[in-house]
Image 1 (cartoon, rainbow, N blue to C red):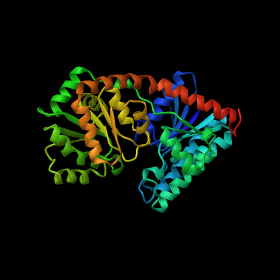
Image 2 (image 1 turned 90 degrees about the horizontal axis):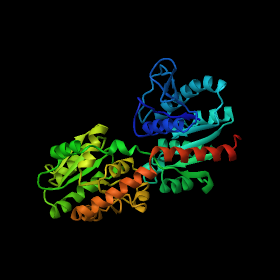
Image 3 (image 1 turned 135 degrees about the vertical axis):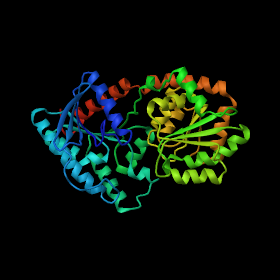
Image 4 (image 1 turned 180 degrees about the horizontal axis):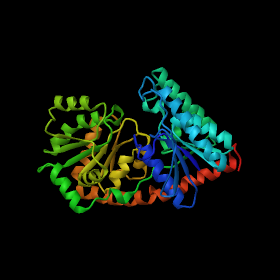
Length: 397
C-alpha cells in the first residue's frame, strides 16, 4: 500500500495523522507492506522506517505560501506537487497494489499516482466540507473543496467512511453507489485510556468539586463541537446537583465567545478552562469524571467519545453523525438531540441520578470498545476493503 497523507507524526495537526500512523503500523504487523508519503520539513526528501512502516517525507519547497484560508488552495497545490515528486522514485522500483488517500488535501497526488501505477485507489473521507458547514457551501473556497472531494470520491475504486452517517452523507453528496462505500470505524488503543487509580485520584482531587459531580468536555473549541449547548444546560444540572463543575479541556477559535457565554450565565466559578491537556493527563481526567459529554452539532466520528468509553466513564452524546453509531451500539450511556439544551440537561441528570447503574453501563461499554474498535480489527477491515478494490477496481489486480 502507498499511503498518502498531509500529516503524519511528528507533524500532527489533528487526529488524522495519528489515525494513519496507527493504521499503518497495524497493517505492517498483519503482514502487509506499507509506504507512507507525507510532507516534510527538510529541504530534501527524507526516508525513514517507523515500526516497519517506510515513511517518505517530501521536501519542503522554499515557496512563500502560508497555510491560511486565503491561500489554502495554493498551499495545497504546492504540497501535492511535492508529494508526487517524493513518491515517483519509490514507485519506479516498487509497484503498490493500492494507493490509499486520506482526505481531499492529497486527492490530486493520489489520483495521479494510482493512474501511473495502475493501482487500485482507495479514499478515506474523514469529514466533508458540506458536513462541516451543516450542509451549506457558503464561499468559493468551500465549493472548491467540495468539488475536490466529489471528484476524488468518484475516481476511487472504494471509499471508506468512519460511520454509518458519514457513509450516507458521502453517498448523497458525491452520488456514489452503496457498494462503493464501506464503513470502517476509527480505531483506538483502549489500554492507553485506562489510567491508574492513583492518577485518577489525583485528577479528581485537582479538578472535581468537593460537594458535587465533575462533568468533562474534551475537544477543540469550535462552534460545531456544541460546547455552547453544554454551557446553557449547566444551570439546570446544578439545580438538581448543586456544586456540579464543568471542566473544559481544549482550545480553539471559539474559546473567548464560550468564556463570555459562561460569564453571562454566572458560571464563572462552575467552569474550569483547562486549555490543552496532554494525552496522559487527559486519560486521568476522563477517568476521574462522573460523566463525559460530547455535545457536537456535527461529528463525523467522535474519537473522544471512544476515549471516554475506554476510560470506563459514563458518556452522554448528541445523536449526530458518527456518535449515532455509539448510541445504537449502547456505547453511550445517554443521548440527546443536538442543540437541545433541556434534553441535554435531562440526559446528564439521568446519569448523575443513578451513578451505580451508569458505571455498570460504562464498564460494559469499555469491553465493547476493546473488541470493536481495537486497531487489529480496524486494520483487518481496511485490508478487506483493499482486497475488494484490487479485485473489482479499474486498476486491476
